Amino acid sequence: MIPQRRPWPKAVLFDLDDTLWPIAPVIIEAEQVLFAWLREHAPLVAQQFTIDTLRHARLELLARKPEFQLDLGALRRAGLIAAFEQAGEDAAKVEQAMTEFFAARNAVIPYDDVLPGLLRLKGRVRIASVTNGNADLQTIGLARHFAVSVAAPSFGVAKPDPAIFLEACRQLGVAPQEAVYVGDDLVLDVQGAQRAGLRAVWMNRTAKENRQAGEIQPDAEVHSLDGLVDWLKRTHG
Image (cartoon, rainbow, N blue to C red; front, side, top):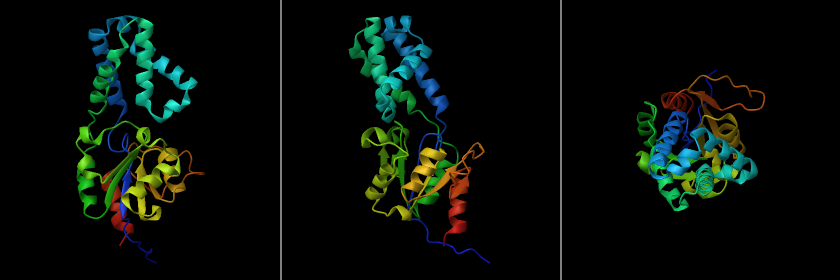
């Protein structure tokens, strides 16, 4: 019996970090760029701290103030202000330090399948992003492909809270059941989107095992945007 095909979704929403590009090497590089800037422009901080001790201090700050989880950029800024003050440096320089960090943080390299996949989708669906991170699609050069972008730091609510998915649907003018969400994290992305009423596709680029299969079952599992488009074509009329 041939399975019944369903209508194409009106919108496909994407997570960004580790879904459209790898983020860990970018953050490592951005922290090195930031520390090189500190050596030149805030030497007292560079003398008193290392990349690792700055990271440890941020984690301690996050443990004391978990609300920073909503905006890791704000956490980094607060951590730098504390370090500058402790080292006796001018904390007015922190904003320039953050500018250096964010420029490097947005120097991401999308996976090879991303741009061709977005172009294949644009003719069929509206495209949006929902992220907990600080990626700037304008700086990255992909903003023109996204009709809507919702980020936790500016919206004030983070995934997996259903509200952030529903806000993206509201801005797109689509019902949750008319949208598909694609992300790499089973809890934040798949479970969060499903609880908001969207279908959710697990972007499993590294062939990880679903260790939460008893609790979380994605509507589909793909390894690239090519796989996503193929699944949509195979299951939707």
